[in-house]
Image (cartoon, rainbow, N blue to C red):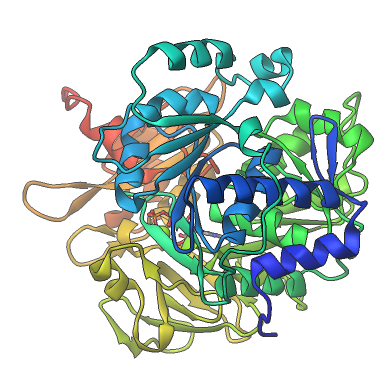
Length: 550
Ligand code: ATP
Ligand code: MG
């Protein structure tokens, strides 16, 4: 199915069909689709008065909250471009992104206000709209969430004293405006809707340009993938951040395209999910494997966590262990499906199962209207023999337009005819199921043979003493890389590198056995829970002095 409507038309359609239904819920406070549309219209008018017009970027630095949803659709309404940011990013990380996209207006939660206002003058932000989290969150909740202590009042006081670099506006005054009048641009299917940054697992995050067509097509594909979604009668739990492509597509777009109720969580917390589940039990819970594990651990017994209405869940962003699927499906009685994708494919492109039987360990088959190829990573014109590992290429209506202002990176990632180089090494079975092996960039080059870190990690976590493992390559002075492993031990286990080496030797070819081991308390992970091997290398290996031999 080809998209025929923009995200704005989609939103208008759903509002007219589901006026009185609940659109969003946040700590028990509910907003209907009608009220949401009213706020979107006012916020759009407020932004128009700040000079936002077609093609402008508007930066959002917000956790999941009702204002986030309103801001998203208000920006789109003006034909402008939403740029999402991780509100827990540091000054340096945010500054890098603001330099890159050059937004004039930023909508931020109060704790980031100072950071954005403190940017040097050559960063183009002129107006900052501050969302006061205390308006939405009771004080106790805020502390329980470990969000920064409310400082809105101090902030306002400081604003009146301090020489202002930027214009300050509170969210409530932004939405005090009248409704948007008719005189404004409307986006088309090929207008840019979002500039979405990648996770930065392998380098600095890159801005991914996605059109209304890309995002609408992906929401339609996601919908076609999940059997039996009931229009106007689902409760989606948004525990994944909406500033990440995955949370955005599933909870902000797909959920709203069918008039679902979206329960918003500013961060994942088992207690908060349990609280909400007593009055608005979830029917659909998209998340990542560590979240499913945390929820199943606490379900049952005296917990008030009610998962009995969950019919579907989608896991993505990292490989999904079979044990996680089994435990989750037992706890809920619903189906857990795995999605594979990347920000550049807005974001999902494969699903498992998808009208097929499930294949444990695989990430699935291509979405409707999506084609794939497996090629030689050194020369993507050369296709691999069936069954041979190679780099996955994807083509379809969800594939992005390019990286923002990075023609070189775009030319590398987007081949002729819109084939996207995923940077992931996969194998495809004869019946079309794709299995992810590892990232091309993280393969370890020992000289001659390449090693997929995931293969070594799998062996390590099969050791009874090891809870988690991350394997990386460390550059040798003589060229090539050494295999090194960071391990997190189970409680009570003793760190014994020689025994671990012995264990690996019995299970892996000699060149794959790690030469160095370190013990870690935990592994550095991204906000959605991916192990950041780059930081493992920097923080657990190169920063350390070589261990004395002896
Ligand atoms: P960057 O591109 O900045 O280095 P990133 O690739 O982690 O960061 P995302 O676009 O969020 O940024 O993640 C996409 C990647 O996540 C994919 O290329 C793939 O490596 C991994 N991934 C996604 N889904 C799965 C899955 N189901 N199983 C295994 N890996 C997955
Ligand atoms: Mg990537």
